[in-house]
Length: 250
Image (cartoon, rainbow, N blue to C red; front, side, top):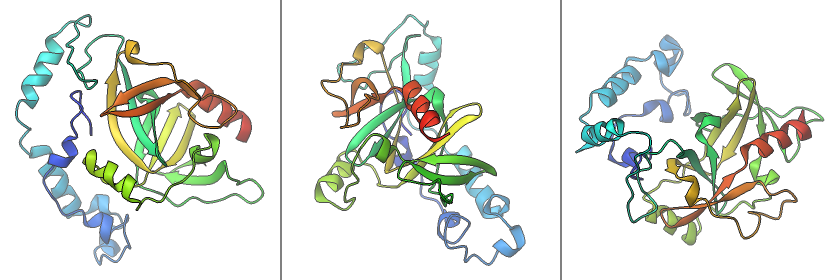
């Protein structure tokens, strides 16, 4: 997770036994305890790991930094030389940064509902296609799943390529596919993505006009570009994005 200073504090989280991702409901389901507890959320091991994360010591200066942020007035802004400034104005925009292929994209955090592990996509006969992938079950709720790769005309890439692996190392990131649940109220969609970087805040003055649309798509789905850790991020027009999905699929 990226806090306001742009650091990835997940990398500083202590190692723990994430057996639910290996042999539990997120893995191959070979755990012998599943017959008793039914789901990993009811397992004492899962609960113990959760307690250990909540009880761990904060990173140095973590509390003091947030105290300073909360003490400041909305009009106060602490500027730094890098684009990873701590933005403390009422106008600051928070986005979730994710990757599709070689493109880094951003959606407003207000549209984000959840980031989850890849789920089974159930195609619908005579309805599923390159854009509408099918239905997914997220915590008991059936949601529509769409391909942003196809909508934005972004090509898939070889995740093992040396260039992409070098970028992962530069950002101290791990390549893990995820699913974004985004939208508002009943208008929610699920998007498979190649990687999720975290939350980033920027001032609207930092938003630059894109010289060209982000892809060869006929509509320009980007409001502009910002820079995060030296890379270009295309800030998507969420209103246009969801409007298009609702009219092309529903």
